[in-house]
Amino acid sequence: QVHVVESGGGQVRPGGSLRLSCTTSGSVGSIDATGWYRQTPGEQRELVASITNGGMTHYLISVEGRFFIHRDNAQNTVYLQMNSLKPEDAGIYHCNTRVRGIWSQSWGQGTQVIVSS
Image (cartoon, rainbow, N blue to C red; front, side, top):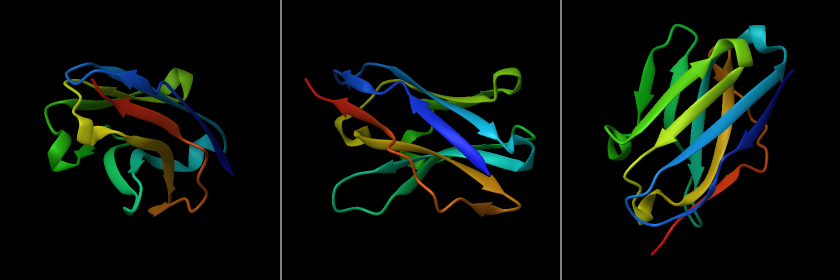
């Protein structure tokens, strides 16, 4: 079983930056990818960015060029650097892990991102 701890959310003005952190523990050797999902009221949770163990990244089109996901294997941590934030980037960000091609159905509390002037 994999456990995740998310941190790094907060409130920023449009154009600002935040860095989210996702630290995993437990059966980390079984993880083949880690991703950040965003939840907004009335909307389905969507995958914003992900990174595989091999370093392959994927981004939601609306965040390409502004968000960057990277991993520190020694710390079992995946970071999401969010730059040039827009109000539409706001939401609860959840970290999730993929094991043998299947994303976990267990969700933590996430970390809230507010983008407002």
